[in-house]
Image (cartoon, rainbow, N blue to C red; front, side, top):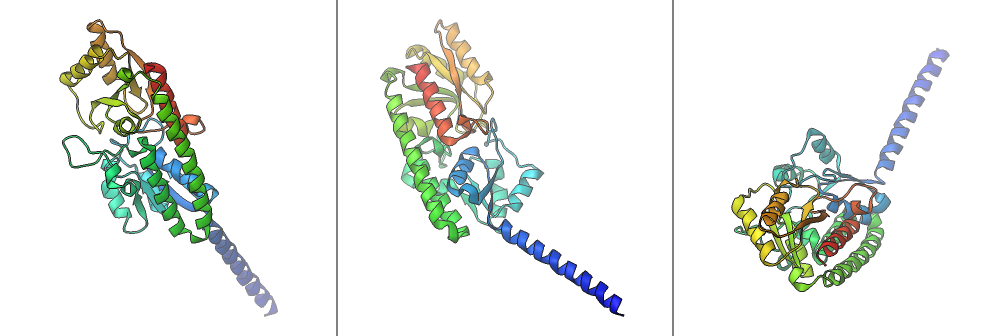
Length: 307
């Protein structure tokens, strides 16, 4: 009988120990907030504000076009497992709107674009919608930083002070990059401040830093373009003697190459001035894989080709 009591006591003790270990593991897990984002730009904000308190999964990596992106089963799993979701909104991730609506019923699902004041948003041509490429105006993007800080603080009130401090430091970094962009763009001759790209992703950039922006496609890469669109850009390049156009990391070069060939047929030498990051950032671990690094790369590439 005593032996059976010893056996039973041992089994119960092992069960209690396993339960305690399991409980400790679960508690430890709450020290880190699981966040899922869509674009790299949004992920960069969350990482800078959350620091070691967040684990961030970004669905869209380098070279990925968010306008055309469709979520995989793996993406749905990441969204399900997240404690909070941040996405750009303003219909940038247009093919995922239904998913976000569903997720919002179970957890905080935040469209950071909604934090930008209405007066700072630019309109979309022939539409009541807004241009979603808000990260190209740093002063507008700073509102996103505030929104992310507030949402993380709601989720983890004990870390509110840390999040606020990180947000202030990050905003100082962004303000410095804003001033850098203003100064550098001014070094381009005024008549040459024309930015020609594959699609109209840089309207905020042009508005904020004093450049005329022309894209072969519309705000979304889902839109079509034709020979007439190509000819309009060719005529602009020839008439204004623009010497460079730019490709984008998330879009095929074919469209903009047609513009270059058209200009050359009219005896105007124009070159591809370099690759710009528009809807996606660079590879993780590189300078261009951060928001400020991506922004600086774009400014330096534009200035170096048009100055």
